[in-house]
Structure formats: structure tokens, C-alpha cells
View 1 (cartoon, protein in one colour):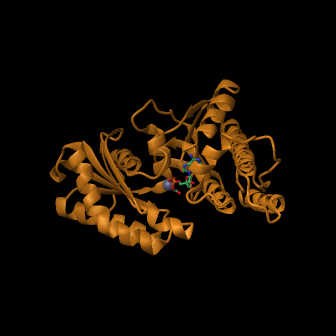
View 2: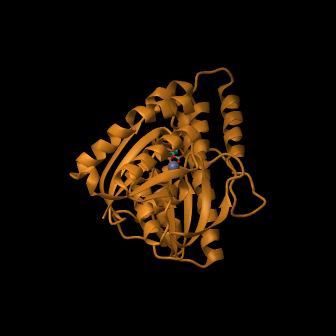
View 3: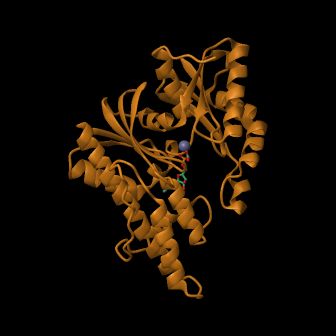
Amino acid sequence: MYTLGIETSCDETSASIVRNGCQVVSLVTSSSLDLHKKYGGIIPEIAFRKQLETISLVSDYALRDAGIALKDIRLLGVTEGPGLLGSLLVGINFAKAVSFALKIPLVRVNHLYGHIYSAFLNKEAASFPCVALVVSGGHTSLFYLKDFDKIDSLGTTQDDACGEAFDKVAKILGLGYPGGPVIERLSRKGNPESIKFGCSQTKRPLDFSFSGIKTAVLYYYNKQLKGNRPSGNLRADICASFQKTVIDTLLEKALLACKTKRVRNIVIAGGVAANSALRDAFYQRMEKENGYKCFFPSKALSTDNAAMIGGLAYQLFKKGRLNA
Ligand code: KG4
Ligand code: ZN
């Protein structure tokens, strides 16, 4: 059974054909990122205007790549939120129109749960119950999953999201947007032990706070510069030290969540989960040292994509979920 997934929650317009909920047959994603770069962040009006222009074309390409026609689709899945309102409306209205025209069901999917589901696509998957850590540009959350439709929140960020902290630190260092990939690259040349940064404590142990470390980077950088031009080494050391501190914090909370909920499996998903240093640290600390099993999506499916939405829509549909 083929599902057409649609995802338009931020700068991307994405469509995917997913077979039987777990096999990604095609995935086409168009991003308006280049148009936002000069502003240092996403401009919602630019994003949804571009999505209006591209959604039909992107869906056509996804069908063509899968070698099927629109009439072969049996189910639609679309992101209902959280995300940029105008952008979400483009995807939802497109999906509603296709659902009405083809007389096929439509399931609306939570974007964060979609991220979790990305680790269940195309590969060996975690078994329930499990813990999931979602680290994206807009969210940092821990969840406890008994099933795809039985998900409880364990903790969330009290201020900046994890990816947002990468983006803001990159902006402070003049490295452009988005910050995650460039910080990961520069970190390889830096010494992660050279600067002692720390993430702020939170009242509830499974919540997160990343705003303090961003400010600490800002003060440290300005103090070191004192009107001089930034050196490559300074920026690399800051990136490596910042990245290590963030990863250590994520690890500490993920371990605590697994211990508290007494589960052995953890899913780590969202844009920041594309980071290789984070993956290595989780495999080392959670798997090798503590005996937990880590499940990541493929790197391509870590950032926003429609396959995770189509796949989860299928699972929810099987459980009786349906939206008009
Ligand atoms: O999940 P995502 O594509 O969009 C949201 O739902 O927000 O995540 C985007 C975020 C951005 O903040 C970006 O800087 C971050 O993921 N990111 C990374 C890496 N690749 C993307 N952060 C760290 N390391 C990376 N390799
Ligand atoms: Zn996302």
C-alpha cells in the first residue's frame, strides 16, 4: 500500500512515497534555505510563498521517482504542526484537496513524532517501550513511547532548542546559517577540552536549557577578540568545546530518562542527530559503556522530510486514526 507523505513545516517542501509504512520508495525535498541565508534565519513569508509555488511539482516528482501514478496512492499523511503557520497551511490544504479529489483518507501527523518515526524507516527498528530524544532546530524533547500512538513527554527545553543553539553560536562566530553542519566540520580541527562551557541546570532533571551556553560563547568570543580579527584556531576550539558540552548534556539526560523509565532502547532523531560526533558519543556511552541500544535515522532522514510523515501516517491509520 502506497502512502503520499507531505511535509512543509519550515523552509522545506517535501513529498515522499512510502510503501507499507516502512519502505521509502521516493523522497523529493526542495528547500528555500538559500533565500533566507542573508537574513541569518528563516523568514516565514518567504518560506510559504516558495512552498505554494513548489508543492505540486515536488509531489509530481515524488510520484515519478516512485514510478507510480496518483491513482495508486491509498493514503495521505501531512504534518499538522508544530511549525510555521503559513507553511503548515500550504501542506495541509494541498493534502486535503488531493484527499477530496481522490476520495482517499488523510492522516495528520505531529512533526516531532514524525522525527521519531524516521528511525523506523528502511532499517531495524527499536522495540517498545522505548525512550526517544528529538533534537531539532525548534525542539529538544524526551519522550516515552509505548506505541506510535501512545507517547508521553518526559521533558523539553525551557528556552532555546538544541539546533537553535548551534545556529546562534554559528551566527556569533560569523559562520552562517544553518549552524549545525559547519560547527560539526570546524569542531574536527578544534580541541574540545580547551574551553570549559556548561549548560544551565533545569528545575526538572529531564528538561533542557541551551540559552546560557550560547551567551557564554558570546562573552568568551568577544573577550578573546578584543577588537582583533578572529583566528581559525579560536573558532575551531570554541566550536569543539561548545559541541562537546551540548552532546554531554544530551547524553546525561538521555541516560537518566532510560534509567528512570527502565527501558533498553533509545531513538535519537531530528536535525542535530545528523551530527557524527553526537552519534559516536551515543554509541560509545550508551551502547558500549551502559548496554543500551541506540537507534538513529539515516543521516538523510534526520532533517525534515516527508517520508517520516508518510510512514507514521500509515501506522496511525492502521490504528484507526483518520482526519478530514
Ligand atoms: O529537524 P530539522 O531539520 O528542522 C526542525 O524541525 O527544526 O533540524 C534543523 C536543525 C538546525 O538547527 C541545524 O543547525 C541542525 O538541525 N543540524 C545540525 C546538523 N545538521 C543539521 N546540528 C548539528 N550537527 C549537524 N550535523
Ligand atoms: Zn523537524
